[in-house]
Structure formats: structure tokens, C-alpha cells
Amino acid sequence: MRVTIFGTGYVGLVTGTCLADVGHDVICVDIDAAKVDGLNNGIVPIYEPGLEPMVKANHAAGRLRFTTDAASAVGHGDVVFIAVGTPPDEDGSADLQYVLAVARTIGQHLERPVVVVDKSTVPVGTADKVTAAIAAELTKRGVEIAFDVASNPEFLKEGDAVNDCMRPDRIVIGASSQVAIDRLKRLYAPFNRSHERIVVMDVRSAELTKYAANAMLATKISFMNEMANIAERVGADIEMVRQGIGSDPRIGWHFIYPGAGYGGSCFPKDVQALARTAHHNGYDARLLGAVEAVNESQKGHLFDLMLQHYGGSVAGKTVAVWGLAFKPNTDDMREASSRRLLAQLWEAGATVRAYDPEASHEAQRVFGEREDLVLCDSAHAALADADALVVLTEWKQFRSPDFARIRQAVADSVIFDGRNLYHPDEVEAAGIAYYGIGRGRSV
Ligand code: NAD
Image 1 (cartoon, rainbow, N blue to C red):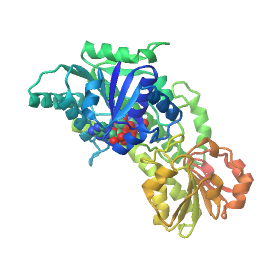
Image 2 (tube, rainbow, N blue to C red):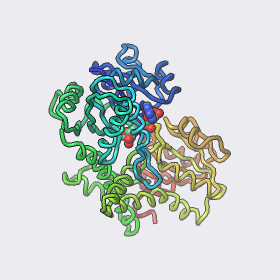
Image 3 (cartoon, helix red, strand yellow):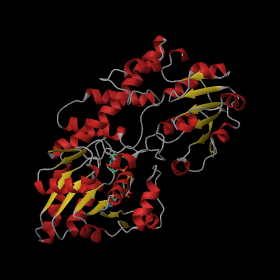
Image 4 (cartoon, helix red, strand yellow):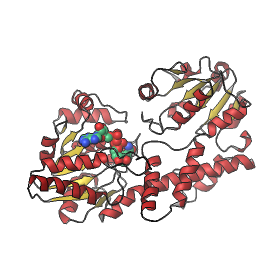
């Protein structure tokens, strides 16, 4: 099938590559000419495990092409995906300017019937706006061309996106027309072989499904962070509590890890956008507000622990930071907890020596050159001249460090573990003070 995808970010590029990999003929279109040029020269702009070789192989095979030429791209696809960003607007609502710009572009260039698919995470009712935007352009041109707009939200996780895309838990198709449903079922048939994964529903339910999924996951995290805060105050260890509840299948093991707060390009903005949608429709989403508020304060928690350890000031301290990405296996730093902590440390007069296996380049872009930031090329290099170590991203390589070496390198012999990677007893046995999240003994 011929497929066009607008937007070659985490979602568009991964989706396009996976669709090409099963034999579809894919054109990815982006307004970022440098990105398109790079991709045409084998430069993959994001880090995602397994993605680069797949992009190169499918590009070389001619099934995956990259362009800035929207007109020819619209002419190509039997299915045209919209996979551009939906960042938060000033009031937290999803900003639809990029989605609607693509819709207008489609309307300006459409020459034959097509199924347009919203893959971006968009508020309920957006498919109607996309339909109206395309129809308005067709009217301006004085042409009548049949088209359908469907919702097909994306559930991939950064860090495991290729795997999620090749083996999705479910494929949600929200559509009112049989043409759209049939075409999308045919498109996804290669991913639906072992068992039925396709869930067909109406458009509005599909749009809400994506927000419900992210809001549920964010809620689990904030719930555990709230439990961790209680555990700290009552002298309980949240890691024991986690083990005590996770085995209950009604609760489950996933997403019950306390930490330094959730980040990334999705949970923070999607929780906010859903709350705004509720508000616009006359409902006060109190739970969502609490999920967000707990997360906001959790992002400042490690800094509070540091102040507590240092008697109120970290001025003049050099802090080694392991992990800058919002989670492991990605270079994405959007809304990462590291951004809050580093800002707090700098504000308080500390210097940061940071190491992240993949996000250094992004950190350079985000923070620019500054005297109080040294980006290091190994975990051990970050420890040199440091007074304290903070762990912010649970990269595998940080899980089993040489504590004796840390003890020697880190002048004040203290670890602030924002992901509860270590056992307090083991760290303390090495002569290092330990602060984790919700580990009762730390207060
Ligand atoms: P991104 O910012 O990585 O990429 C968006 C891309 O769209 C950019 O390359 C940008 O240049 C391009 N673009 C903007 N306007 C364009 C236009 N008019 N024509 C062509 N290209 C244009 O975004 P992302 O992380 O891939 O997210 C895209 C959407 O998918 C968002 O709605 C997001 O909420 C949703 N989503 C993201 C994830 C994730 O893990 N990142 C997961 C599920 C859903």
C-alpha cells in the first residue's frame, strides 16, 4: 500500500520505517529540510534502539523515502498520516496548529480519494476540525474529492519504539467509514497475524483512548510517588511496599516505580490537555490535577534531599549527574526531571558534571555552553572532582557501579538516587551516605 506520513519525529519516523519494513511504499514528509537531508544521507536524527539500520535498509530498498515536497507526498499515499507535534498551548490545551497546517496542506494538494489518519495525540473532536480544514481548502479550489478522516492513536514508547511498532499490544482504529476501516485493517494486517490486535471504534472514543492510556500510566506513577512520600515520613521503605503490592494481578508490576517524577513529551502535556478538555466540557478533572501536582513537586524532591543533607546550601558544590534523558534508551530530554534539578543546582550555585549515554548532544543543544556544566563522556569521568553523585535516569549501565570507586572519587561520599537503583545497605556498607525516594530511613 502507498503511505504518506507528515512529520518525521519519534512517531512519524518509527511508524514510516516499520510500515516500509513490512513492504509498504512509504514517503515521509517534513518541513525541517535539514532533517530530511540528513535522513536522505543516512543520518537518523533521534536515538531509538534498532531504528538506524532499519531506516537505512528500507531507504536503500526504495520503500522509505524522505521529502519536503508536500504536493508530491499528498499525491503518493492511499493513506496519509498526520504525525506532527501537538505541544501544550499556553493554557495546557493541545496546540493544534501543526496538525491543522498539515490538514490544509492536504486539502491544497489532494487530487484523488484518500484516507487521512490522525496519529498525533489530539483532543476529542480534532478529526472534525481536520475534516473541516481539508474541506475548506477543497472548496477554495472549487473541487470535490471524497476523503475520510480516521483516528489511529500511537501507543509506542520511546526507548522501545521499534519493538512496540512491530509488535503492538493493540491497534486502535477510530473511524465512521467502512472504506477507512478496511484500508487501515489492510495496512496493519502484517502486524496482526498472530492474534487480533485491532480494536475498531468511533472516532471520538479513539481520540479519548490515547489520553486515557497516558493519564492512567501517569496516575500510577504519581500514586507511587505519593506513597513514597508517605513512606519517607513514617519510616517505611517504598521498595518493600512496591514488592508487596505488585504481585497482586489487579495492581501489577508495571509503572509502580517511585522516582524523581515523570517527564517526556507525552505524559505531562497529555495529562494537562485532558484536564483542559474536561474543563472546556464543564467537568473539573480533580484526579488529573492531583496527578500533575504530585509530579511537579516530585521533580523538586531530590533537590530538597540534597539541601537537607547539606544543611540548606549546595553553593560551591560539584555534583556528578548520571542520566539526563527522561528515561533510558532515548536521547529525549523533553520535560526530563534532569532539567528541573540542574536548574535548581545552578540557581543554588553548584556546578554539574553530567553523563548520559545518549543525551549529551541533546543536553548541549538544550543548555548551550555554560561554565557550571561539564558534559562528560563516561560515568566515571563525571565523578572526577565531584562532591556528590545524583542518579536521574535508570540506564542499565548505572545499575551495578563500583561503590568503592565512587567512595574514592566523590568527596562528600553521598549518593542521591532518583530512581531507587541501589540498595541502601549496600551503598552504606561501602561508606557512602544514601538517599533514595521513599526509603524511610533517609529522613
Ligand atoms: P516530534 O516533535 O519528534 O516530531 C514532529 C515532526 O513533525 C518534526 O520533525 C516537525 O518538523 C514535523 N512537522 C511539523 N509541522 C509539519 C508539517 N506541517 N509538515 C510536515 N512535518 C511537520 O513529535 P513526536 O514525538 O513524533 O510526536 C508526534 C505526535 O505523536 C504528538 O502528538 C505526540 O503527542 C504523539 N505521540 C508521541 C509519542 C512519543 O513517544 N514521542 C508516542 C505516542 C504519541
